[in-house]
Image (cartoon, rainbow, N blue to C red; front, side, top):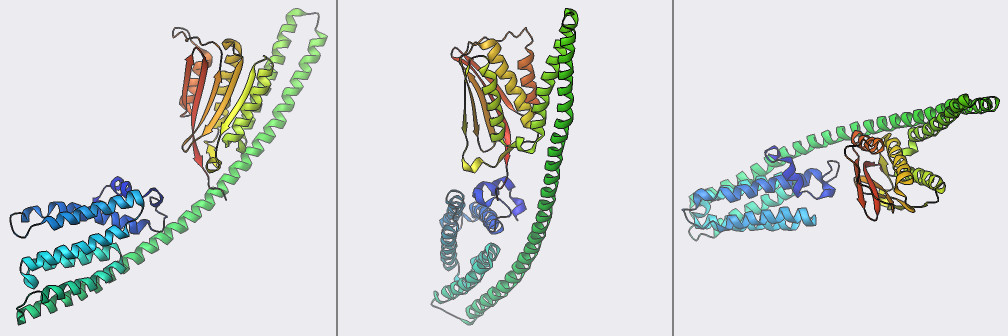
Length: 413
């Protein structure tokens, strides 16, 4: 039955905390939502063919309204038992009234009690047992509400009570088998989830160890080689100090070596597992900004907004490397072209993304679309390649560069 209803519609009425299939009440609440949705739709449509016959069918529309109230109480308040019980009791009142007006115990409306009984067992076995008792009470009330009692009427009431007991036991057995099968499936799901969780943790630990070993080994090898190149170039510069044409080449070797060493430090840091933490990334950018802007007599400050619920946020693997390159390029452009006196770096972590921005009070110059801007084009390309949202806002008060990167959350132990 639930397959008849779109999954999005069912999830719309489920409270957010119950949309997880591992929630203990997920199956029961999902059944109530689907059953109430189907019952409400049928109550709105099925009485239409009977509209030309007595009695009035307003009671069925009242039942449909109570079904709608049950759905919205579940969605907005997270409760469903009070409106559901009220809807069921109202259903008995409407069915009894309809039955007495259309032939009492011999009325075809009596069969509606069996549909109600099936609905009760579908919702919950305990509700089904209670409704089995209510069905027998309702049949007895209908029987004794008619003054004239004959043998045929007595046979009808006994038949209805026996059928109620029969269908009650049958529905109980079917529902018990269904619950047992569902419990077995759920246990198998938990076992598979536990196995996958352990496998993911082991794999994550292996990747973490590999990243740390790679960073350490690469740092030792590359750092030593670059340091040796720089020292040897410095010695060569002293020996060739009289040859100006060669000194330019030596200076370029030293500059390229220093630049490569700086770039390798950024790469090695981004390989390290801690670089996925937005707070570690922000601390790294803050440290770079403080050292960098001290050379130019530019005031630099950093602000971060993060609460305890978002401390477990992590960037996608290796995203920090591209963010570092983007903001280093942005900081360099501010120092070279903006003429700023103050620069502010800010970060805020939200439910689905982290926002990092760089604000300066320098002069804003609208970029010429006819001229290729390598730095800006590079930042935009890195953002597109990594699904970042990248924007530059310029005004008379300065320039604001803002980047938003997706994050995921881990469960803190």
